[in-house]
Image (tube, rainbow, N blue to C red; front, top):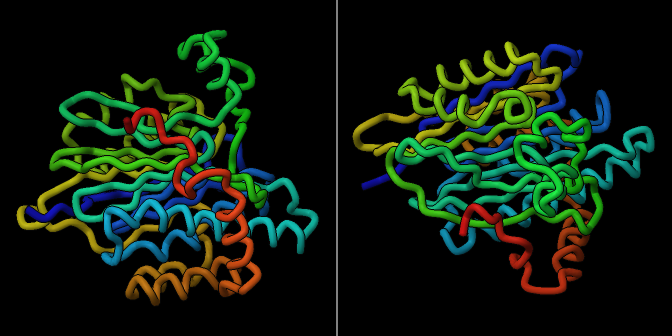
Length: 315
């Protein structure tokens, strides 16, 4: 039985911001949410850069054993590019982005995560959080100083402790899990998870609506809850490709979709799509400089390249 992803991506600027610094990509093999920070232009560029490098992974060439490494390498290249841009444009120093990504290889999903965007799984009517926030309030929860309920109203709940900033030490958590028919995945920025309760998210995800309608409802709920931040969601179902025809056209939303060339890129092959998208986002072709930075980052790891900190919920 062949598995496929039936997906939908949505993004809204929110109730306060004048620009969208979130970016997201949903395709047949790859789901990514990136929440940029650093002010207008800075956050936009950081999140778009992450999408621009990761989009090249959206094809069928990955084995289950290699997909985690490939996610890591793509994120390392994006991180190095963020650092290069900040050096070339001092006004953008301090920009960064979260990244939460799922890469499908047949029945296996590799997961990469850094920051406080989240991935959830709805299986058998039960919602579980697949990622652990890299945030100040999460450290308070882990140390027993506050509860998860108290964290939702903590004044520093938006303070992140790890994101991609261009520093060689910015490394994601990695993990993997089996995907089963009927699974529903949600990737979102904190514009949703910070303002809509998990039980409400579970109720909407379990309503039986298709991904597009579900994503629309989640964004609407976040806005009704008063979300001042950008709100970005991807909803994806694991389906039987022989029983249901899933979408094959990727979706790009948020800052990464602002380029006038973006819609043309979506209609092309994965390789051509990636080649068209990256210049449209203002990204240069990969240079030897970027390759050296990525390789140097791998070489500075004190252990095996993938032995970072496995996402707790994946065990």
